[in-house]
Length: 146
Image (cartoon, rainbow, N blue to C red):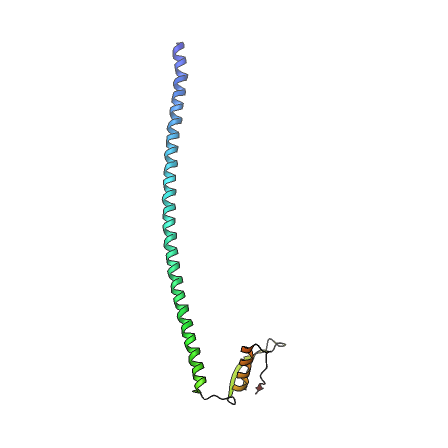
């Protein structure tokens, strides 16, 4: 009987060791599965990031093309206006009166807004533009309000 009592604890310890080894193998398998899932998701995220960067680059390229086209159109229009004024096509001289109707709000009475008709000549406007381009002190235009 003494031998059977001694065998039982060693059998129990072997069984416990076996159970622990089996659990360890299961945990290792679970860890490997998790690592493979993480690796596949990392690869998928990298592919998605690459696709998003390509889409962003394409949109930026299209926006730059549109901006370049708009600048070219603006430059062409400015050149046409300059050429028209140089050759005198609109027949605008310095005595030509411009009438402008605008909405104004006085600084001291910000709750009042009203329409105002303003008249000034092209000569006055040209003098102000030339002064601004030459860096001279700002000049005011004598406006006649009506």
